[in-house]
Length: 227
Image 1 (cartoon, rainbow, N blue to C red):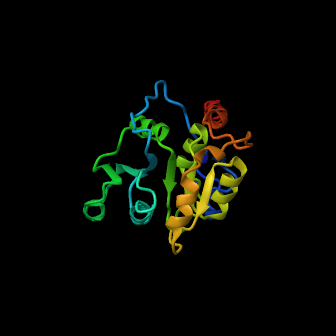
Image 2: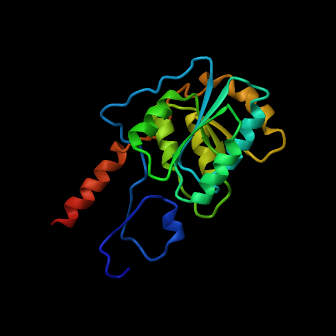
Image 3: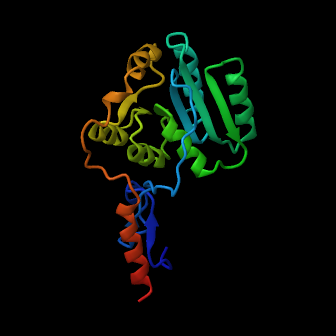
């Protein structure tokens, strides 16, 4: 670390987890930068459309989402979960495919290769709810997933696992519901929540989810390094 002039950290929490950067730190959070063109994905208007996207893995709660939605389907027959993203672990892909088999309420669109960000954003803009069912994990508990900033920027209601850091953001922005996906009969609670996505984002939030709020810090850092 002594040979590094400056550290750029993607999370504020890393400052507490890492001692070696010292004071040579700039935090640039994973905020949302709008794309030049953002299409919508045609969807059936009678569906309640949930989306789980990004890196698809056990730790990020894909199996929790599948379990909850398949149980929820009996209460809300018009529920539709799209799982869209990159699966780097072949056995996980096979397990997910097997778990989704026979469930018409799940649209599985996964790949061994990363999915184009434009496609992810298009699906996000076309969904009613974004699912973020992360399992408790030391590697993510002090981080703010980029999907949170994207959902805030696009004003998509979120169903997100309980976490003190995320709970504060969701509450401040009126951006959805923090929930324990492992709770008994959680599908009954979700059935009441999902039918009314319009109650969120009712007033301005102090949270700025856009990359433009970080961009100036990055440009300033680069300019100083060139002096």
